[in-house]
Length: 407
Figure (cartoon, one colour):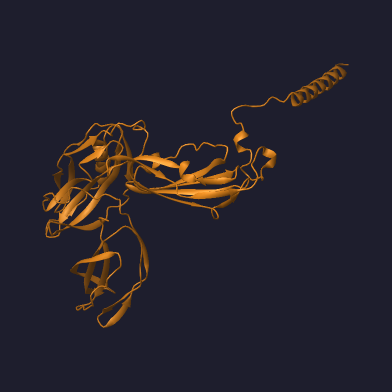
């Protein structure tokens, strides 16, 4: 939600003329920028014009940007359709209105105050004003510098999810209506495990300018206040963030005793998805539950993510059952500052004879799984006696051969 969608048109030649950019559903049209430069095409110097239109997302979700046409220099140019995802829960950075010099080394934090277990994004970036005439360059040891800075900013007693930046790329940012070129050097999310405040000291980045002349840039110190969660029996165990739950199951609501079906739960939102879990769902006289795996989708350095849980459910007794009574996720909602519970919404209607023994079950790959034991080895007396008899027989034969050779 905090990133703009950009549509860019590049025109080569001395002149350019194009229609306005189209309206896009789910986005608000923003400013339009034009930059000019020169390049070489087939060995000849040619003017190049870059026209960029910014679109601000209105809401989160998945969007299909349809194909559209723009008339450029009396020629209709057609775009290809594109699917994009807008993550409405991803936090932006809190420092975008701070004072930045023409060239500056900036430590940005997504929030200045968080709860224990809540994620905060920290980013290290080099900012250079579009009006800057100084030739800034990254030194050869920039990678070693970033690693040393990363060790300095990592808070104690916190979990880290780092975005691995393999190459430094340029992006544009407008701060107080001034255009800056931004180069992100480091980005990670930290989840504090206690209520100790996070303190980031002033950091120094060594850059080169106007050739090989070294120029240090110093960041401002940062403080992130960490608040304890309210009292709750599960305070130290619940996930912290903003989450939504979707569930789905195989077939319709009508089920038969003894016939298992698949049931899936998708939890999406903002928080440390790795610690999110339903725990063991206990069997009862009506239903048996077998977890068949989970899948995590959360990129390093991202607050938003998805976790998918898959189950097999075996009905044993006829009746109507609300699966929300079995699948509950208690978490702390950082927006409301209260504990909340997500529950499954599916309901099933089971018919058929009651399952009273394993002989009545319709057999599938999960039948009898709860009786399997992997924590002990069974001792087979018959196999041991057979092995011992064979050993004695071989020993007697070898003894007879030895005596025969001695004669």
